[in-house]
Length: 339
Image (tube, rainbow, N blue to C red; front, side):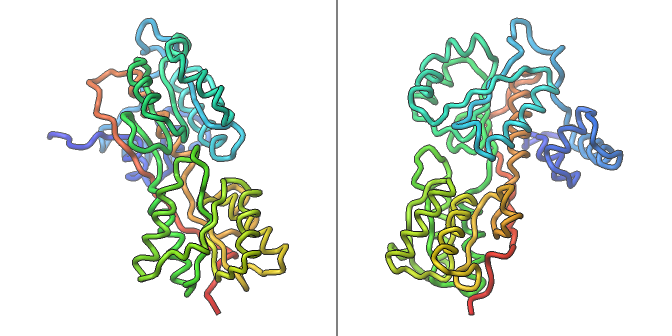
């Protein structure tokens, strides 16, 4: 039989009905995996012909035995979850991990990507987490000889794992429209370091287009990916006299800020205004925020597995590919039917 599709750990996860993180642990015979899950994974892997990456003993001679994980910041919840899942995969495959936080500083970024030859002396590969590269940096990485994989990046010449941000925003907006909300405001990212800005706004616009609605410029406010940013943006909307019946925030933390601002101005959620975000931040459940969840840990684990496969290179290399994981609408207490 001729394969037209590269079998990955995602395929095993889909067939077994388990998360990528669970599958990764089961394939490496790690603890905290039930016997039932272990059997499901083994059966799915055997059926697909998938084999886990080998351990350190199979690394080629001359290898440093280390990989670097590069993130815009190491403190944000998204990067912390992705890093933890990736580190587990790398450790189980025999690699030490070097964590590099760009700290959202141009000087640190220049130091890292301006001297990749020095970095290549320390590590065999790089896992990039939502790093917005310019064309020169992409070209330098390709020429460096380092194996590369990424999470949350677009149009890159290496393996990438992410979500369909446009579809996630479409899901969130469709949810509001389905509840009868037609006057929708959007808190849209204005952070150029965040890769997801354009697709999420495009998804919002597409959902409106499908209902023959237009984006009202007075109901669009720029907001960065923090609680303070969301609070300022929502306050701006309120003080300019805009009274949407629902708000779509491009991320959960901006949505948290919107909830604060609405409460401070005596507006009840969802009685007066419905609010929805994207991500399923760990605090979203506690605050009852409706959101579109993305599998953060699974993205980190999947990308780490892909990088390990590139590093071991026991078979002829496959063409790099973009792997999109599913998102899920979660309706909680901050959205309801318009009355």
